[in-house]
Amino acid sequence: MSTAPVYTRSNTDWSAWLDLTGKVVVVTTVRVAPPAQHLFTPYDLVMVQFKRPRAKRKIFMAASGESIQPGDTVKCVLRRLGVPDATSLINYGIKVAKVTKVAKV
Amino acid sequence: MRINIAGSTITQFGELWGRSLRDLLFEAMEQAIISAQLEPSAIEAVFVANKAGGSLAQQRHLNALASSWFPHFPPALRVEAACASGGLAMIAAEDALLSQRFQTVLVVGVEKMTDVPVGEVTEVLATAADMEQEIGSTFPALYALLANAHIQAFGTTREQLSTVAVKNHAHAIDNPVAQFRKAVSMEQVSHSALVADPLRVLDCSPITDGAAAVVLSTHSPQKKSTKPCILGRGHAQDTVDLASRASLTELAATKRAAAQAYAQAHLTPKDLPVAEVHDCFTIAEILAIEDLGFVAKGEGGPATLRQDTTYQGKIVINPSGGLKACGHPVGATGVKQVAYLAQLIEQNLYPLALAHNVGGSGGTAVVHILGKESA
Figure 1 (cartoon, rainbow over the protein chains, first blue to last red):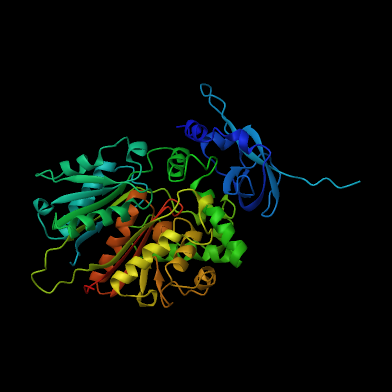
Figure 2 (cartoon, rainbow over the protein chains, first blue to last red):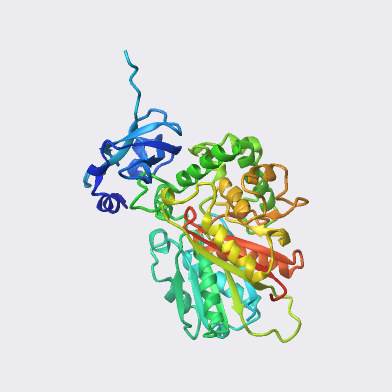
């Protein structure tokens, strides 16, 4: 069973999310995942509060293995959402990555 | 109009390799009718609660299967509301009785979960979430987000979460149909494998086969009845996806369903000596006892740690062992809660009781208050 078509069909506006930043409200680290995400474990699942133009909360997978905490600023990035089997399309969509502040020199 | 619980039964819960979905369904229906001292022909309609018979047991026509057990093929329908399927089937049956279309109906909840690999069960259970919004989530992960929100807001601790599991396993020891009649220690819970931080394996309810059934009737008992009746009931909904909720430290549907039930029963949370609440995860019990008004918001963890929610405390929460230790055959759970409490009331162990059933991470909530006197 693949949830990819269901999710992808309802999230075709992914380009509107790209580069938007938001603040992490709450986070968990998923260690036992559905089969499509199994190879990403452990990964963070985060609820993000966005400001305008999309002032809403939304749940995303985190893009990398870095530790994300509540209060962190994250940015929407395009990433692979699942590991397909031999016959499936590769499913891409929005994940979030931590925004690291660059120190002023 | 008074709705009596004329009969009730709960099958063995657990990994029941030798029993199929059909076996469990038929066993529960037969035993409930025997318990009600009725003939099968007295059942005018059947309400079947089930979440995933099609995915987990290759059976997607459960209403007809249930009806086919009877010689007269009564009308039957299936109700699905994720883990609240049982509670909602009760509501549907009660509505049918209150409309006076029927006078005696049977509600049966059933789930066969252990015939497929755990990964598949996890994926099927995750469909209780919003699959268009929450990719990468699992059922434990969504409750882990709720747990972390509760920890951030109220300082809820690992020790408090573990106490829920320890208590419910202790309660299940005296329940002959429970899946786990085995005590667990604080250390075992607190050091079990992480599933979704902070929730560990022993914070989670198990995968379970099982069924439960009740016979509901509006017929007036011919002699003074010892049968319990439904004093109040409530049913409320919320968003399926967690991120759209107004608050992450409560399940608003539970609060609204409870308010309906308390008002109908003319009771307050302080009047209840016992409750079966939806502890699919340890944090879920803490949220439930707060949202049902048994303790103040944020006090669920400390109250559990103080032993306020077990025998000799202020209210006994989940005497059956709850979902955590009695088991959680998803579609059966809401019916099992009512059946178990009805039996306690019939045995004169408690005058009143509350059952609380939740679907998904709070998208559906159903509350029933049972007692012996009609409101």
